[in-house]
Length: 290
Ligand SMILES: [Zn+2]
Image (tube, rainbow, N blue to C red; front, side, top):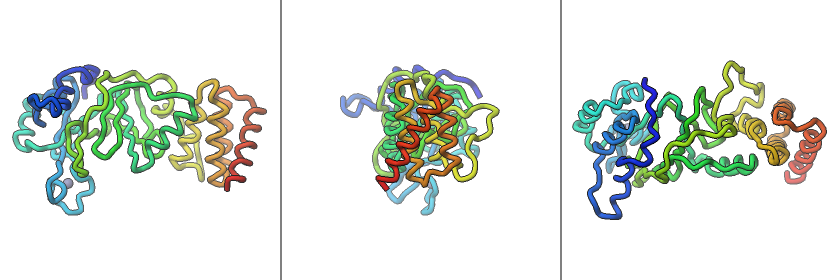
């Protein structure tokens, strides 16, 4: 696949359609939106859409209502070919729009129903950082999609409720309609931002490295605790370790998880004394709370 640079998507005609509702001017239809994305270099695919009785596929038990691809090869059919896109929306004028990210683009898919917004806020506070502004969509389900330039390979998720989407998948894009009745919309019009190094550490899977966590701690939640410490910035390292150790204490303080937290703390420059002091403090806090 190509390595399109869709940075311009945030400022072009693509976005304009989303705002026309209020001004009353001409509103782009789905086909025009799909074509505009393709012209901005984004790979487009047609998706199922909501109808009165459920998903447009007609299956009562549809596993991914109003989100699954309509073409046989799914994300692999995604294209910037305007003619092909035109023929799809001629067949399915109401189709939702899927976008497959370019190879060096990662999208944080924050699902508040899975606790993603809260966990992400905790993680960022523990690290003493904020997500940099970037092209961001509001999803129809109340979450966000935040697009970042960041080379792969990627982890599957950043923390509980925050999946990392990439060219191995696709995103439902504005102005697609969600089963909730709400539409996806662009929340920001800024271009896709390059992920800073701390964010890259959270998004990228270390190349050639085996998963650092074994036995009990193979859960993504435990993995998130270790990464929170490993990506903590100076000034926030003790706080990040304390937070992660408290969460570990709540899980019964498994020895292998604590060892992983110690290793992560060492990797960001905390010394042994600070590490043990912080972990002891977290253990007593965790127990008194429990
Ligand atoms: Zn369906």
